[in-house]
Structure formats: C-alpha cells, structure tokens
Image 1 (cartoon, rainbow, N blue to C red):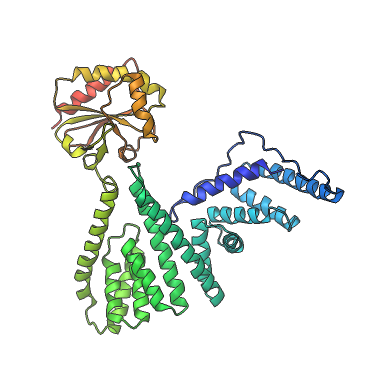
Image 2 (cartoon, helix red, strand yellow):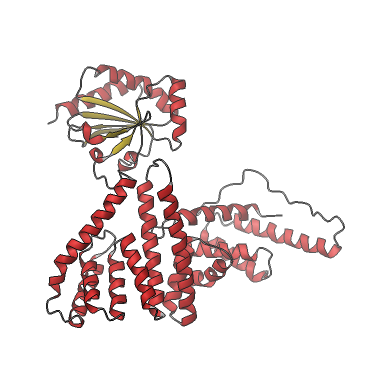
Length: 455
C-alpha cells in the first residue's frame, strides 16, 4: 500500500521545486488533502510464498506507520525531515529509499539546510532528480569543498543545471500568445541561467580549465549582465594573463546597472578595479569607467529592447506605459488614454459578485456616455482566456473587454471585483475593492466627477 501522505507530499514538493526561482524565497510546503482513497493493488501472482506475503505485510505496516507519523507533523517541514530520517535509519533497505532520499533532498533545499543538502543532494541527483534548486545548491556546496572530486561533481551538476535552464528558456521563448507575467518569468529564468553559468565557470577555473571558464562566463554576461558575472569574468581573464581585459571587466562590474547588487558588491567592484590597475600598468583606473559605462549601458538597452518585444509590459513603471490585449484582437496602448479619466473594472468569469455589480456599473457608464473625457475599460483577470468570450455571449455583455496583461499585478489587485479610477495624468485617483450594492452607483459617479475636476 502506498502512503497517501507520502504521495501528496511528493507531489507538493515536486511542483514547488520545479517552478520556484533559484534566487527567490522558497515557497511553503503544502500537503494537499487526498481526494480519493489510494488502494493497494493485489499481487498478480496468487501462488506467492508465505515469505513473500510476510515481506509484503511488513511493507504495509511500515507505510501505515510512516503515513501516520507524517500526518501527525501537521505539514511542518522540519518535523517531516525528522520522521523520514528516523524511518531511513530504522529501515535502511526500505523499498522506497530512493523516493525518500529525493524528498529529504528537496525539503533540505526548502529549508536551506546546507548540511542536509550535501548529505542527500548528490544521491538524489544521481538517482535522476533534475530539480533546479537542488542542482544549484548541491553544486554550490561542492564548490565550497574545493577538492578535485567535489569540483568535478560541481561542474557536472552545474552543466546539468545549465542544460535544464536552457530548456526552460527555449520553451518560454517559443510559447505562442501572451500570458500575464511571462516577461518576469523569463527574466527569472535568465537570471538562474547566468547563475548556473557562473558556477560552471568557477568549477572550471578551480580545475585549471580557464578557457572553458571564459566561455561560460562570457555567455552569462550576454544572457543577463550582472555585477557578479562581470567580477567573475575579470577573475578568469586575470588567470589567463589578459590583465587589460580583466580591468575592463572590473569596470563593467562597477558600472553595470544591476538592481540585485548591494553597496558591498559595488565596493568589491571598486576594490577589484584598484587591484587590477597595477597589473594592467594603468595609473588611473578611473579612465576605464566611462567606456565601461557606455558599454554596459548599450548591452542593457539591447537586453531591455529584447525583453520588451517578448513582453511589452515587463518594464512598465506606470499604468500609461502598459499595452493591453483586446478580446476581439489588437492592442490598446494605455498611453492613448492620457488626458482622460479612466475607469478600470477588474472582473472574472468565475466571480459571482461581478455579475451582481455589472448592471450597476452599466448605470454609471450610461451617466457619462456623452462625456468623451471619461473612458470605461473592462479588464478580465481570467487565467483561461478561452472562457471569456463564451461567458460574455451567455451573459449578453459587451465584448469590448481587455485581458489583464499584468496591469492587475501592477496595481496589486487581490480581490475581484475591483474598480480603479485614474486621473487625467494616469495616476490613481481612487480604488474600490468590492462594492456596496446600495451605494455603488453614487460612489463611483462621485469619484469620477472628482477626477474630472482635478488638473
């Protein structure tokens, strides 16, 4: 019999680990309650021996006990770790040893437990796990050990992670249609890819394979220009005796606009500049800074252009910078709304209150139908966009609807319906999460009139 808690723990961890960004905070582990009883399958061999039956019964007893103990943890990752470790200690030849080891490794990653990551991670990876965060953390742990065997394993796992992130990136770039947040997901994937490439470079560098290290760090710099990548590139170039280029790479690190870097990182880059200046026979390293500024600025602008083409709303910093997809096809640049009062209605097909609010909203629209300075925009927040058009047809609602191409996330809309009124400059004038049926028409009308009177 397969433990129900064991199955659902495995599923929850597998889903969480695959999609989480390598640099982000680990998601909470959630054990989903079982929706149906998982029954043991009868043995196909009816003539099995008494010894086989005894062994099968022993497995049943172990699973039942493990199921109970995991259930008693209340989903606490630390407690689940202790239960699984105790089970492995008592039953070292457990038939699910490989599965339990993978779970132990994944929970260790979630808990950022370096010792356990190193203890269980390599075995889990060799057993077939390609969990990106597991590959990342095990590779880092092996790099820190520094001996030849560990470095070769770090390189192997780092290359596996690079392959995994390349595949994820290619899949994202080849996807058809637009999905909200797709630009942010691609950015996180590329950040993870450059991090994996830097680890590969470091492993190669420590193994004395500097040309291979340079190839990896050069690719990292092109995929996602970062201060860390530029500094690593300067180290590799220095090892190759290319001191002038190493100094330029340090200048790149000092000037690159890396939002993830800290003041300490900048200080490291500055110290690196001074350190390399003498080796490159440069009296004043600051002469390399302005060219580096131009160089990194051009590289970042090219990357931003590429990312905007993939997701036009990724770098939007105000509502009027968004470009919205229309249900009936085409795009609406929100910049075309400048000078008007814009009423945004965030709704969804699954939202019961939205159906109640809709006729009230239509009353407000009718009040301002002759005022060209007021625009009403219905924004569907449905993840499954194929549901929207049939829903509108059934409800006999207008099909002048926009899809939420990240605007809801920008406004941090976390309840539906939500109505937001923008003033003529595109700034939020008022926000109405939910609605009061008896007062909604008057409240929204007053807020629109207030926005119209503002300069």
